[in-house]
Length: 277
Image (cartoon, rainbow, N blue to C red; front, top):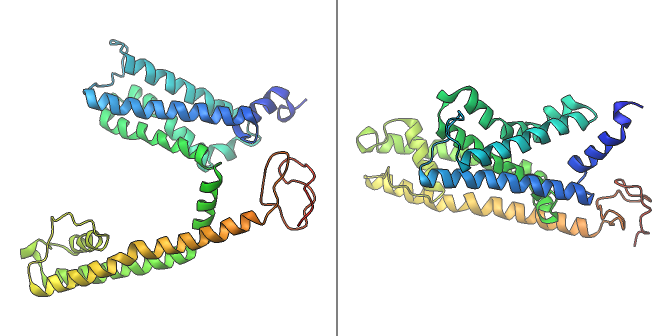
C-alpha cells in the first residue's frame, strides 16, 4: 500500500484539510483558539512589561504558554506537510506560508536573541491570520471575497486613477507651499495629499497660503469618492454574487453549492443533486 493510500494518512488529511467533516471543522476551531491565545499573550505581556526570555533560566507562565502554542503549531505544520499528496505544493501555497510564518517566531528568538523582543511580538501578532482559515468557510465572507474578485479590475483602475490624482495634488502643493511651510519634498507633499483625501487629517502638515487652502478644499471634496466609489462597486458585486448563489443548487449531503448548470452529482462528495427548478 502506498503512502498516499495509507489509512492513517488519509484520516489525517481529512482532519487537517477537509472542513466539510465535523472533525476537520473542530480542528480548525482549535487552531484558531490557539492563535487567539497567542495574540492575547502578546497584549498581556506588553501591558505588564514582561520580557520574553529565550533561555530557560526564568520559567514564567508567559513562556510556558508560548512554548505550548509553538509546539502545537509545529506539530500541526509537519503533519500537514506529511499528509498532503504533494508536500512541496502545500509548503509554497498561501496557507502553507502562513502556517510556517506563524510557527517560527519563538524559534527565531531562541536562535537569535539579539533580534529584539518587539520584532518578535509583531511577528507573533501575525498569528491572527490563522483566523482567516475559519472565516473563509463562512458563506458571507465567501460572497464578500467573490465580490472583490469580480470587481478587481474596476478597483484597480479606480485606485490607479486615485494614485495619479494624489501625485498631481501633491506636486501642486509642493509648488504652492514649498519647504517654508513644511512641504520639503515631493514625497512629503504626496503623503499630505493621501492623508487629506482620506479625511484622516493628522494636522502635521497644513496649507498656509490662500491658494494652498483652496487646493486643499478641492482635494477634500474629491476625497469622499475614495470611500464611496469602492464601497458602491463592492456592494453591487456582492448583490450579484448573492443572487447568483441563491439560484444555484445545494447538495443535500455536504451542503456544497456552486454546481455547474446541468450537473447531476455533487462535485464535492458525489451525492445525487436535486432536479433543477
